[in-house]
Length: 409
Image (cartoon, rainbow, N blue to C red; front, top):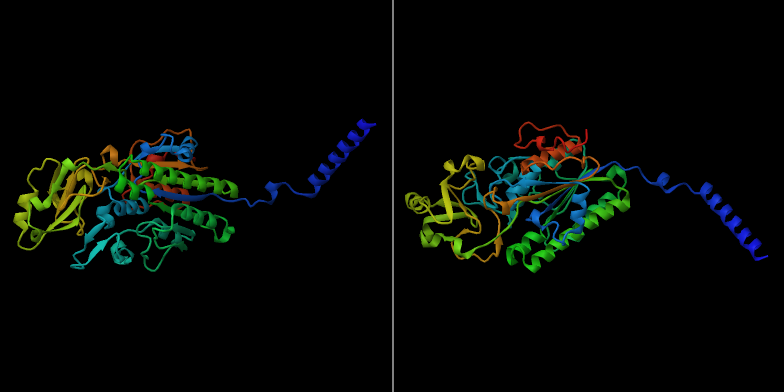
């Protein structure tokens, strides 16, 4: 009789499953139908050749399911000018963020520095409108989890959600903040979110491009990107991810250092920026002396009057640009004392070591399309405008033309 008992149990189980199917709606019927969001992620100083080396499984998977291209930073290849170029679509010479340290003739003696309170002063950022402000004005809710320039309002407008930069708020916490925004009801959920990760830049400066500590930082950044992708999937939240870096990174060569102290007395000039890219102002009465010392040929650096900077660099017209602009060859530094950085950025934007990461993944992208040929980072703003449904801007430097085949029509 055992087979009768088994048959009865099977029939009972079938009936229970049928009852469950009629009494509980399918999961898909209870889930919110979520509209896609756009998320911009910057991994500061992330070189594209960090991919596919066994350290970036999450980024590699997103690239395999999306499109990866090659992006040229704006000159100078520094963090603040390039984040402003990405988010505004305007080159540094037009946005006014011409360096990480700079002066403005309208405020004599006042220095802007990316590590000082001046970075939150709207005065320095008034030359260009970041996309989160454009979006907010159009009624698109935004959330920004750190970004250079975020702390300055624009005519009183800010992102709906934002936070002041804090080194101690690590990448994983930043990503989880964005995911918390995505858990909100549709009415208060950002349609455009931005997050900035700086661990690779900070580590590479101190340790070098391929040091074990830097590769560990690369793995950390990749893990956080994986947490973002997995979290969005768990929420059922479709997202168009645009993952970029502001520039690459190159190891410093101590045999290629130009020490300005060997050429000039300290009282003759003022550095506005130093490193691979340097801005130098002669002090009153020393103009001829400084020009004679710097504008002559040097083995590993070239200097120009601001009016003579090569046209291809799109630089030298803004009043904040220093009187003399210098650029070191790969691995070089222009400093007053020997450098302590093991790696640096700021070199020629066409230097392969300066090439920036560009990776997209999401429902708006046609993954059958070939990656766009090398393009400028000011083109990211027009791409994001398209993703957000904002009208094209006519007064910026970027164009969405490189992405014509990449976007689904």
